[in-house]
Amino acid sequence: MYPYSLKGAIEDRNNADYIYSISEIFSLKGKKHESIRRKINQFAKRDNITYESINKTQLDILWNFSQKTLIKAKHNTPEQFESLNTEQSAIEKLIFFKDQLNIQIDGLWIRNHLVGFTITEVIPNQTLLIHIFRTKIDLPGISEFLFWQLSKKYQPKCNLINFEQDLGLTGLRQFKLSLKPIEIKMVYTLTL
Image (cartoon, rainbow, N blue to C red; front, side, top):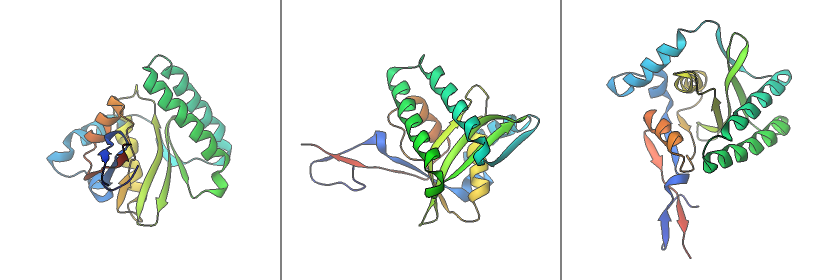
């Protein structure tokens, strides 16, 4: 995969990166973000919501939450299950090497129960790179709320969020598009 078109290369939409303006997501001004604001406000009505960094003693809670998501995914399409299975392997490595990596793990809690988490990294060009973004999807507005919380936390030191590729998963693509990216950075694959 290449970030620019070469002779004989084709667009690889499934691996394109979704780029967002942190200040836009943080402020959510205008009609463009009306739907996101509504979903965030709906979720925010819940009691005892906290958003904070996950410490070493909470990593088992994160792992168990992630495993439950994977078990539920067995009822999804083979592509969705495979994607989550690959992501689970990445989560394991990120947790294991957390102290050696420049990553941040944040959790979203309701009444002291983990309902979502992110694994992110601030890269040199003031971009927040989202490696993993997982929520309990049966809670309306949770994903939008977590994305907004990320923008709030990192707005002082980052200008952009790179939400990485959707791997061709329809639901994930729709969600990322609903967040109104300012750019979809296409990548290209060489054909032989």
